[in-house]
Image 1 (cartoon, one colour):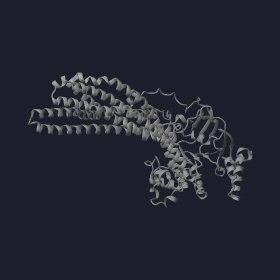
Image 2: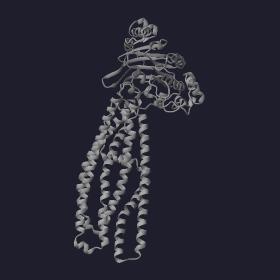
Image 3: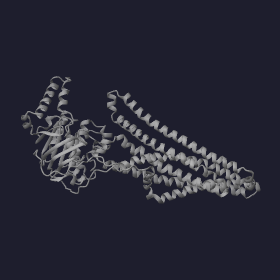
Amino acid sequence: MSDSASGPSRPARTPGQPAAAAPQMTGWQVYKRLMAHILPYLGIMGISFLGYLIFAATTPATAAWLGWTIDQVAVQNADARIISPILCVLIVLFRGLGGFLGHFALEHVANHVVHKLRCQIVDQLLAVPVRYYDQNSIGRLVSKVTYDVAQIKGAATNAITVIMREGLTVIGLLLYLFWVNWRLSLVFLLVAPCVAFVVHLATTRYRRYSRQMQDSMGDVTQITNESIKGQRVIRTFNAGNYVSNRFSSASEKNRRQNMKMVATESTATPLIQLLVSIAMAILIWFALSPELLASSTPGELVSFLTVAGMLAKPIRQLSGVNAVIQRGISAATSIFALLDTPPEKDLGTHETSRAKGLIEFSDVGFSYKKDEPVLQGINLRVEPGMTVALVGRSGSGKSTLVSLLPRFYEYGSGDIRLDDVSLPDYRLGNLREQIAIVTQDVVLFEGSVAENIAYGIGEKVTAEQIQRAADNAHVTEFAAQLPEGFDSQVGDGGTLLSGGQRQRLAIARAFLKDAPVLILDEATSALDTESEQHIQQALNELMRGRTTFVIAHRLSTIENANVILVMDKGRIVESGTHAELLALDKHYARLHRLQFAESSLASAEPDDTHAGDANNEAD
């Protein structure tokens, strides 16, 4: 390995910098985009429309049936005694059939849309850069899949149901009124501008309060996740009241935003109803004029007034649907912002069945934020099969450096090459096939021991291969004692296993992957001394013939590394073997003396509180 730059540098790049903000879409543009997801289901939507058309037609038909029945009673038509009950049943039958077709077909479409949106969200979350997770809390991301999608379903189902069912009903009733007496019916058109103005004012408030509700709901979800995952820490530090107060504050904020939405809705709906009732009052006043009474039968008058009265309910429901639509638009805006986030760059085309493991860093620089470099001028060459150990204080850039290898982050300047091919030139999936990672923060998934060992590749490996990986990582020792052996469940995040057992599962996963490049980030940190000895032997076997990067705070675990790199403030300040670095008597030698002193103090005085200071210095 050499510290000198090797090969030409690639042009400087500035990945991770925020792209130019996309122009803000209007509510109508967002809703049109949401409705575009329904286009594949136009046939089923047609069935829904037909159902609600039948449903709407039965409303004026009911008024007409009532008026006809009254007129038949007046003329003493004996046949009406049979016809009227039959018409009553038929109207209710068709109303029920239309309502069923409309609602069922629309729910079918809405649930398909929600399902596809959820899948798109999860697929996008798996594709966005790691930086996206650095900038967004888990609670807010979970809220998009749960709360936001539910709001979209309301806009795509409940709102459209009301618009189609009640809208068609209003149209049917108005057509009936105009057919009976178009001059009187013009009264309803007089209140239309006033209703439109009220709806416009309410819409502005709905949008604002919906966005605030989403933000507060994200906080509620985040605190809930933290409370569940960190419940042992919360109990240990008696932080229950603190967490409870935080949650109460976030929930109270969400409650206030909900009440603002309710207040707006509760004000707008009665106001619209008042305007409609004024129009109806004027209509009734004209309808009861002597001239109209003289020219109409009792049945016609009853039908006319009944239809006018029936308009109140659908108009009230239509006025309330705006709140649902605005919630859906606000939620859709949030979801579309995620779906529009550029995924990880994967423009490379190079593939290899198995890399040799030659890795070169040439003047590599990286920063999470502009003008705040985390890595500067990293130059190093690692031959295939070599073990490179990274040591240094916490925050010196060790984990960041190894995170560049699987391209969790894109380096900002210089170049990194694997087998003389720049990392961006590899197809991303193929590059990551060449790398196995074991970290101190073990991530296990709900499932069995065997499923976690073969996570992601279960269909490609045999039970014998899983068993062999488990043997190498000393998993078999504890798995054999579990109730169902390798089929035993590990619990949520591996809660049914000890820390050391979880660590061994992660190591077995790396054994099974059998990648040519291995990254070990404090891979034995969660193990007791006896287990660590077994695992260290297994790791030595795993590292054989592989290019390995080891991040370690305990220097005793990396004394046999081919090269030890000492990092400080994002730079490599020393490199060499254990003996060479001790002979230099600089950074590494000082860290080694501090840890040796710490071990001596811990042995002589187990309760000495000053031992931790040396450990902090070594970190």
